[in-house]
Amino acid sequence: MGLADARAIRGRFRCCIIAKRLPSRWAAVSEGERAVLASVNGVQRAMSELVTSMSGGRKKLLFANLRGASYYLLFAVPAILLLVFFFFLPLWEVLQQSFGGSGGFTLDNYDKALNNDFYRMLWRNTSEYSVSTTVISLILGYPVAYYLASSSGWRRALVLVAVIIPFLTHFVAQTSIWRIVLGRRGWINETLVDTGIIAEPLEILFTRFAVMVGVVQTYLPFMILCIYAGMLGIPRGLTMVAAGLGATPFRNFRRVYLPLSMPGVWAGVLLVFVLSVGSFAAQDILGGIQNRGIASYLRGGGGLNAALAMLLLVAILALFFIFVRFIGFGPIYRAGEAFMRSAPVAFGEARGRRVVLSIVVALVGLYLLLPTFIVVILSFNDSSFVWFPPRGFTLKWYGTYFNGDDPLADWTGSTIRSLEIAVLVVILSLVLGGLVSYGLVRGRYPGKPIINSLMLVPLVIPTVVIAEAIFRLYFFNEYMRSFMGTIPGFVFPHTVLALPYVVIILTATFRNADEVHEQAAMSLGANRFTTFHRIILPQILPGLAIAGFLAFLVSFNEVVIALFLKTRLFQTLPMNIWGGRVAEYGPMMGAASTIVMLMAVILLVGVIYLRRRAVRRTG
Image 1 (cartoon, rainbow, N blue to C red):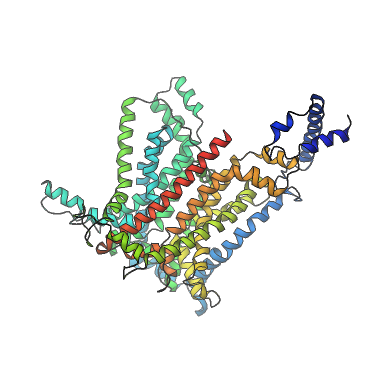
Image 2: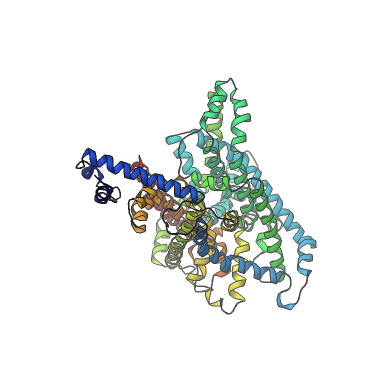
């Protein structure tokens, strides 16, 4: 049998793996034909390896006709263009305005921003809140993250629910609930007075303590997930070897486990610190004028606000590049792998210590879930005033939501508008983020760290700074003014915010995808569409679902940009929830927040189902 006959045999089975018809067809092949086919495939693999080695090890997979791996840089071009027009260009406008804009160059705005006593107080408050939030979140988050990484079954599932639920409940509603808990006539004060522990209600609300309670509860889940992601990357054998060599549990933790978990710790510290710097909801809702930070005063159009925004931006970027220089991108991308992995990692410990750890985790979980629990209960409150516990139960607030009888807000219209924006953001961010992630994983080209930095920068820039920049771009540019109060005007900034999350998840997904299947499909003659549809897409589908879910949450719950871009006729659902943050409007806000949470839970269940289905298919 010659080479021509071997090619004929191979032609009979081309793409048979993709078509899932290999077993039945392979049985009809004689032993001689199998041997010839195996030898031909062996020759082809040898030639492929030779060509690969001669080309410097470059991998040409789905896009096999590219001249070189550096062409994968082109995959990042669409995302870079989006960032240029809706991130860097707006920031450039803010920079110009901070130096006086068209009125001439001046440093007066920066002089006032740094030397005025009032703004010095704001800078001091911002730094204190950020550092305190980061430290407290680390102290509370590390035990929870360790419990997640070292547990399995229903215990880990229960703790994960407590960590994820705050993401599904709108943060404005959660923060507003603390007014009910911490107020003079709130739940805590009434309980303490009724039990005789105190004679007069405590002044807790509108203090720094109240602000810290709200801020930490909002950002603690980010710290937990980042540390948890770092712990999942710890090889279990290292702690087992240390224990086998006689190391005590404490020494094992201090000398082995803790140093290996530090990349996740640093990633969580960076993310929580940056997010808390740009936070203003807790200060506005729970704190007085003396307890607010810089972010609370970045909602104007003057040069002074531009100078404040640029000073805040420079400080955050300096921290980000220091992190990238000494820590790298690994911990950030490893956070994406936490959603794709599930194996527990732990070392032996005494039963008493495990009991103490379980008690700490239970208390932290109660702290995270308490606002969500009260939000749901208040949505059934019979009175338009906030009473907790409710003195009567009703469904009228849900009826008002769906019937559109509320004279203060168009709930159904704003919900539909937010859904339209979120769906478009999911589609756009998955397309752009998928291209970037594929190029980052598959390609080898100079400047890849720069692309990494560009994709992650929006994640570490306070949202209030981005919103300020987008507002200036739209309002002061006659060509962009028509974007104010429109769906495209919201979609592009929301995509900028969602893109880093999508890139992190999809990059981890492509790294875990098996390249051998992709190479086999291409070598068997499958075209690009068939390879993507039958080989690549099934492998990355769980990652796409998770990335899309995160993009949906980022857009659907986004309120800061809405504060800047809203008009009288165009408001999103988060903007209406923000308007309902006052106590007298609480039950309607609770009903809307509960509906939002239910929609997010339905999406999350779908994501979990897709992930489990993919795991079963891959064995």
